[in-house]
Length: 501
Image (cartoon, rainbow, N blue to C red; front, side, top):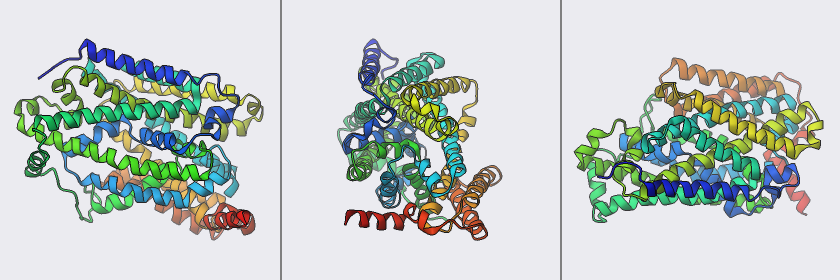
């Protein structure tokens, strides 16, 4: 077994980091307006956008967490990979055309047109709060793993990841983010393939043997049809919980919606959304396959199993103790790529929402220097995420692992607000906002005082928002249906048909 991080591994990692900053920095000076900086001038084609969506979704937590989940449990969570294309189809039907045709910068601008400014501000704050916390947590969690593998100080790992990502995002804006995401996707894919091929090589390319060992140890179970909401990863929890969560993530979350707005036209946007679902599926299956490989390998190597402190650390443990020189550097570059692609997308989307949804509503003078403020706010969010990650160093990991599920609290109410606006003309502003607040509180209370699994957090928040928002609207003054009909799903389609005739 090999141990340690060699000079060659450091060279591989350094080459990756330098390449990312150079690629991102090469777009500096090409932006002439806020639209160029925040939306890449709305001139991107579907393929790089599709890859960027995938790279953003595959944070290091997912990249390392999926194989660890299989190693620790089984394949029940793999259902999410097969459900994703169907969930994305609903996003394309419900959200994408309506939002794209409005020619807006953020998803929450839609809510101002459909309801009022207060609803827009509430939704933007939900997004900023959830994604801001997620950004710092993800950066810290990855840095801890990098420290374990490379031996570098955790603070140094945070600074390397945070400052380099902030630098190229600040310099190049959305276009830099998309093209660095594009490159980083293939780096993280290369790292995953290196692990998978090495395990297969160790087993003489006998896939059946690997599967049989995993089956014998109970790691290939795929379905649990229990109705108990406290059980982990049941079929029903996956079907319902992930549907709501993915509708929120890909239909209302600025981190993904901003990519839809960066394309040349609606057709390109639809291709990007659909393409991301089709391309992501085999990548996810590869990660689940790696988990099966870890299960077999560690079962057959008792010494390795004994030295593994936690199932959550199986990928970094395997990387540093098993993989040969050079491949270790590639896998660590893949972990960096998974983190930096998600972080850059988070910085860019948080900057866009902060600028367009908050600051420009407070002062119209900011519009005159939009490009300057966009860069400044991007730098702020990058440095804030880096600083937030450093503050987490002394916290216990168990606290952070629970903290990671907090974004679920925001996802349910957010998608509830949008569904009320898009599917009915009856919903009114203040009842919808009240419903979202009650939905958030209900989700937090469920997490605090019940034992239900986190997959149910988003459905609870969404359902409460829908019920309270709609029932409250029955007793509120109704908006003029003709004015708001164009902002509903059916009304938007009718308007599109009339325009095309």
